[in-house]
Length: 597
Image 1 (cartoon, rainbow, N blue to C red):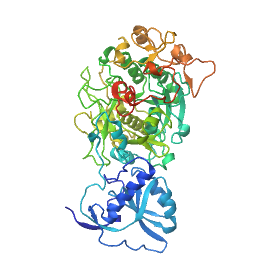
Image 2: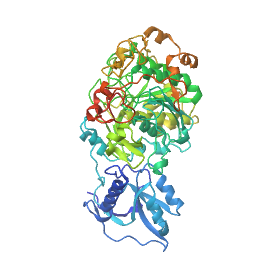
Image 3: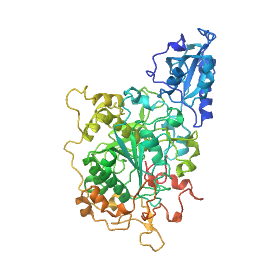
Image 4: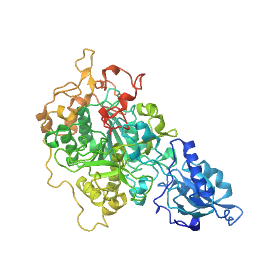
């Protein structure tokens, strides 16, 4: 037991603390209630953790007052900046309160309390600290059953994930504006947090609008590059100045086919020069168990890698057993991201591999994942009225944000960190990005690969003026896939349905055909080059839209997960219930009805 009488303003310097108070649920009112409870524990001894030996010290002047500022997201500097703009002075970090001490003009308190970056403001006081325990413990992700998404929805928003991987220590001049990230997902609904940095919304589906009617892709885009506009910077992505190109391969129910994803990868490779694409995020995978050596899907992500792109793929959410990594995360070239639970702190002592995070070895004996990143209860952009948003109201955070858990989120974080590394040093190769990320990761044991990524160490390592000796390069001597195997072997157990023969009855897409109903020629696929010219000649080019329906173009065939929902317009129909929300297709107990991680 520790007994000490210290003023709150005498704690260790800001951003050095590992401790933060976490809100107990998602809405602003709940966050404020949690903050009030935390302040009550600190200032009124409600839980006997802290003692108040005396009243608050007097302010130094009639117009100034000492306060405790409790932040919504301690990793952000938005609250500190606001205090300064209002004529105040931030003081020391208060890790138990999830905020910091400050002296502010008394007249500025109303504006301070109204800020979206601040959960509460209370008078400062002297305390006697009895315990180094966190003021508010949350249930760990290990307490949630893998098939109980509601449990994960109820976890408080993770406030310290950026601190846990050192993003707050990366110089502010490196925010990712030197790179564009292509997100191959369920589309992106425009949001002020992305603004004009959402450069293109490409759509390979029958919906043709580029919008996210499922809700997954918008969340990933925000974790990659959201700038926190709608939350006063309380919740930002890993690279808040990076640009996004959305490549939509699935509609309202998340249904897609391997061939559609491959077409999306071909579009990215062919158009990378137009948008200065350097990174690809693919938070998706199948449960196929074939090795990578002849697999067309593995070959597709390798083609993106060979084109110089950093390809990040989510490991899957079927852990913790060995050999559970999804495809194409099994490919040795790509950066496979598993999920970590950082337990609400920046310290590494309580970090753990999330229990759902898939792990290797792969069928080929490759150790996966390569690295892990925060992936439990991360707050990002919400796609209002999307499938996920409709079926998971407990995960909403205010009017514009949403909590998500999974290796999808972890992959998006890694993609954002890669963008910031390329901002630091645009000359980096993708092999160097992977090599540095794994070389600088903090080891975390079985299932973590090289460990938890360290953004600060990775950024420092690639500084052109600071590098000592050659940078580590991954993938040396790795044999590429031939891609000549049957495409059916890439699908695993999940088959989307479509009316490919036009008889009005949908059937599963299976065998050696693609999502357009055309025969799959494995040898021709393996031999073909990917370029703007070959893309223009592909049957997909006549169907794809950029930023909305293109006049004169026909939509791609409508894909769905279940024939009962054939022809249903975008949106959630009556009867779309939880049985379609499980892991059978998505490999994601937390996100949906298919393959998305």
